[in-house]
Length: 472
Image 1 (cartoon, helix red, strand yellow):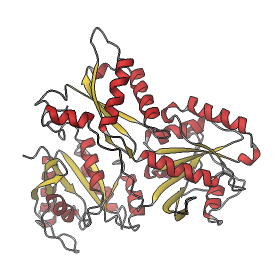
Image 2: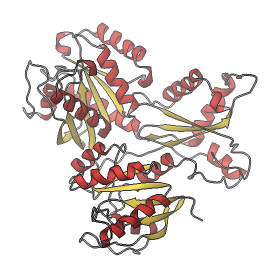
Image 3: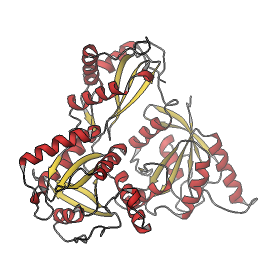
């Protein structure tokens, strides 16, 4: 039985019917390169891993006068939106965001339902720019997707669970199964796909030396540099192949960004646009290098930028640029300790001294980026997590609140990129923030999750050792 309903919405010829066929596992919907093939609502039973739901394929949204065929098609689409619990809003990543996409994004937004943004036809590199543009629709992080080839299904699965937590829970089969999943011997895993380019954004205050450093990495004067702050305006994406110290090669996409100043200091319209573009680059990246001026590090704006990176859930590397002007190992140790003190949300992040001018430290910076990206993609086995949790709670149990005992029963990692853990138990809404931080710090130290944000979600009224109860 379908637990929930999803409507596929978008302008004509973005691949909605191909997506429908992919999810139902059959070629039920007619597919052609010509726009407007689908006219009526089509419903099917969809499946992604353990999720079962009803999917509605709709006609491509078009504006027209009332009474004509396309207006009646639009009415069918609006009816599908009304029936749905959530919406897949689809754009064509190869074309990018069009005025029609923006117009109908407003219509979908008024429905006040969870929206999952799919940048379809994103196979290869042709869809990178269109996926990047999709941030401007305001629906959160777009999922690069290929309905034709099935790429992005894992990300879609995770987005569904996040968008509809109450409707995507599953029954535990029995106590034996839960015990196995809790304390089983399954291995750690990863979501790392080395065949895809790693997206890296370099951000920082104006005149921190971002473009100079990237030119050094690229081995050419690809980006305009100079002593004047604010030369870079657009977020420039550059495809590049890294040769690592072990001789292997890795495809990367580097983003140089405009210097980020405090919002109160930004008056010029062009600079505001450049700042917004830099923030979008952070959201699009997987690893963010926050470049500091080593002669004046950890200014308030530096901390604000790091906080933005952490809130967006991106892996982090701190680069201490212009190190040739400092070159003091005692000072480096002092700055690393200061980083942990000032930035506890990403404690243990790599702090790498580097000089874009001389090239010193560039290879170490590349190694740090590769390592933190692997950490960001890491999955910890449920068995290891719960053995650690049992020992931790025995040594330091959660405090009682207003006479009620808080009981944490079980923990699992829901996703990576960044690591996201779910804890089950009773009275978790009363769990003090300090104890939650204690658990996050324990996870970070025990499982070497340094330099990445850690998310924790709490689910109550579920004892995984009791049969027949559901997660909520």
